[in-house]
Image (cartoon, rainbow, N blue to C red):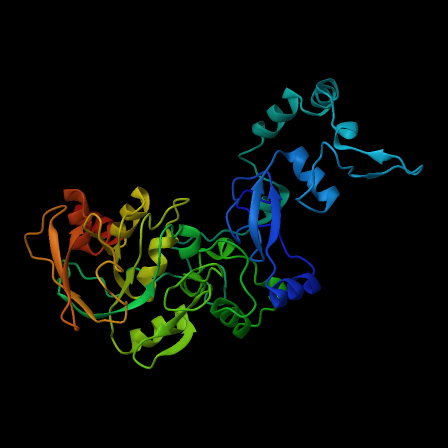
Length: 388
């Protein structure tokens, strides 16, 4: 178990049985990553517990146990062993703390913290003024966020005939958008890594490969619990609308990109809830998403979208895609006036003749400034160039 919540693999036979029979399997954890599919893609229900209870449930091998009345196991003589029989007393815990958790241990570690370990000291560090990108690395590569950037502000054009990449519901979390867990064996990210000579045991996790935009773009919306209303069942799939083909989200985005088709996402309430994750905004940007129209946004994620130059648009109160009769298969167009103001109303039109107003969720003048620059990264670079 790690602080990020990845538990590692489970037996291949178990995985096959779970997937073949569509079983709802559980996890019990003491960390705070107790949401669906996080500690492992095949655990749908995850429960928080103290470390001691995690061990107890592991011994029991099931979660539907009543520790008060059901034993954890039997002694050699056949008598039952209950949780209360092995639960440590405060005195026993204190004795362990006194023996192993001593102030001198922490002082010794902190005194050498700047030196690092022996392995850290053996690392060879480049001495160049700028980082020498290793083109063979699958962990760190030069990101494309500044490609095509100019000294002058980019010209802002109307968004015309945008397609809907995903039609989502309520409570889409940042983990749905940019999962940090293990890389699925048949996912676009897995195919990318396999093409570079890696085997599944070396795929690692999305969290470990955040320095590789090619992996992270392919991992965007790659959560197996993603519910896309275009699809009949959960998973990282969508419909490529021009041909009505079902495919992975990344593959659909790539097709749209080749045809210069702008993309939007439609969502319900609390879009972007969960942990603050920068890749939940960077990923959609790399897929070609220009705007997200949702019933409401999580506060920090809305800010992160603006920081990547994406446009957060919010349905009017008591309105949503379904109440407006939107299928998500329309073409969407809108324009932001040159004198845009925070929170102003924007009219969205569709090729079916339907039109509706949305709230522009640029909440401050700073949001407008970042948007005009194409995001906070571009703003920072232009600002540094100007000062130099």
